[in-house]
Image (cartoon, rainbow, N blue to C red; front, side, top):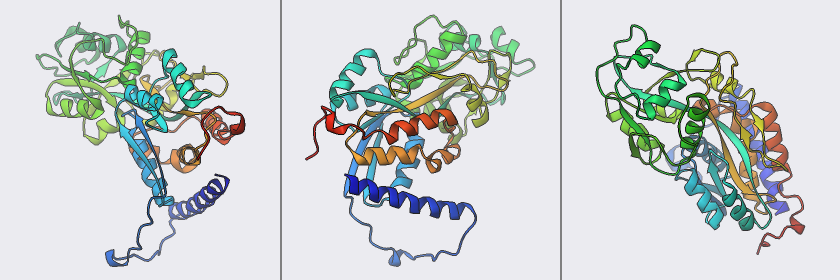
Length: 369
């Protein structure tokens, strides 16, 4: 294992230097024709993960670049929803889970049992929940948290409702029924969205990974995107990068300071200024402040986690997560609709990853063959 980690570290350093040179504008590399392409080395080691569809774009980008740097190593990831990803991890089918929400206490107990010691949540990326809508006559829709809760709770059913009109003065709101879509699967995005509505919009239900409001359920983030894109006068909640890639409009949301704020990487990052870590002993669960009054803060954000064992005896898991939490992995996130972790939180993640293989000789986890 030590030799493998040493090799991974050396390759990562070389790759970082190459990427830095490319960023600085260095060019002149020879272009290989298809016939000149060197043979690809066989995959020597692989791991798999599953879970959050909100972090799928980031995972796909990280996996591709990690494989480019280490052609004989492969990380697979199935976008199945946070709940399914947690189940896969607990059952031992995957080496890590992607989740937009912390495990429930009963899940934590079973995950710890699977790991032989403990399972931890490591924040990896800041996600942004967009209210994506299909309303051609209103390119700049604005919604307060109370109005959003009214729409998704079924109390506001028409676009020309006085409460919507009051927040969009002069907008040509159609006299049509609101077509509402939500996630039908066990979703961390749903949990974060309902937690926001509960805190800021008088949502009558407890936050949950299962939808408790009104509307039509569709599977996965891709299903929400397809439904809203194909249905006029509709609205749904979905990860921002997916919404923008699909060309959907996204609503401005009023924060606790009274501003209607458009969703951008900067406005999402501002919302995390008052977030705090509430996990203990290296478990980095983050509590968000949905009522932040920070100027320019877009309030509906989430932190997506990698859930894995700590300590961890798999050097490939550690190497991949070190890449994702490294400067190269974090700096590319804006290209895919995400925001990087705040610097202080990122430092704590890196400390945990550096210590991930500590004390493995005393762990009750199974030994490697």
